[in-house]
Length: 276
Image (cartoon, rainbow, N blue to C red; front, side, top):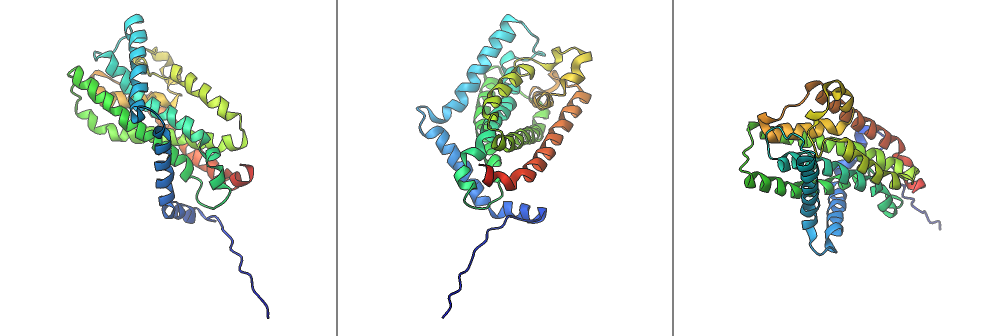
């Protein structure tokens, strides 16, 4: 009497079409990871979700004092706190996604090394968690508008488009750093420096309009310049104008980084379980 053993082999999607189908099939895992990270982030804090309001509010106050009061930089005819916060919203979304996305694969090493699922779910869920912070922080912007009796123009209707662009920029950075952090663990120390350096070279505490015209195109090589300018254009209305060429350049760089980030992530994805 012979016994037959059945061997179960878990295989990743071999084709791009099957891979993207797997992303949909594993959507419940995506919801679980995002919800788990949201709970973990705020469960053991005293003031909970209020941290998503306190951090950007204090940053806005400091930038308003330093750039608006001490440096006396122009604000295009709008209250300086609103100018700052319109730039701070997309920047903090991007910076949080950078920090969370870069360590997302390492933080889920036990899951990745045991079962198959499209690894793209992990950094994407990290970006979604940062997007929740972004939505909560938007309450401060509404409060500032009410405080200063600032009524946005019809351009506010275009804000979802610029939110989508900000999401693309966050995903691009998250995918690149998540992939690189698996192989090169030094990136966990590099990311905080990148976030701090990026804050200074991005028009968060000031308007990009103060950049000399002959430097504007070079400055737009920072993809976040176009994202922040787009937010301010939508929120501040006719009082804020953007450089069209520079904006298109920043936008092109965002989607170049996103497409290359997806390509590199897919290229290195099959080795994550071994390296981690």
